[in-house]
Amino acid sequence: MLDSWLGVGYTEKITGFNIGYSGRIDITTLAENIIKATESKSKIVFGDPRKGDIQDSYADITLAKTLLGYEPTTSIGEGLGKTMEWYRENL
Image 1: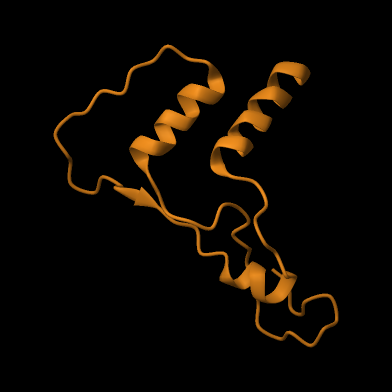
Image 2 (image 1 turned 30 degrees about the vertical axis):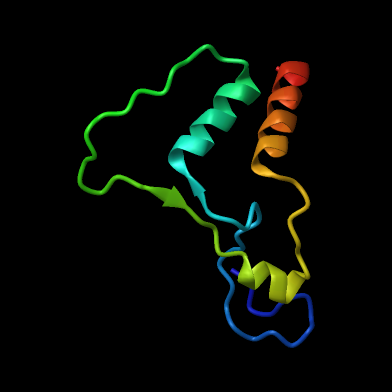
């Protein structure tokens, strides 16, 4: 936890930042992107919704934008592709 943010006078305690894609993405689109990035032959299977199922995901990056000047420059698809490329080269 940071008591101040790099000496710029920010005095609230910060427990973390969301750093990532700033838009909403539905789970089907995320799954499609993962299948593409991993070159998987997996098929998406839809079942009956269950209580508590996540319909879409959204990371609020407002704090990172405000305090760090952060702006996303990579799409979900690009990021997953780069991640898989790194894993293939390094593991």
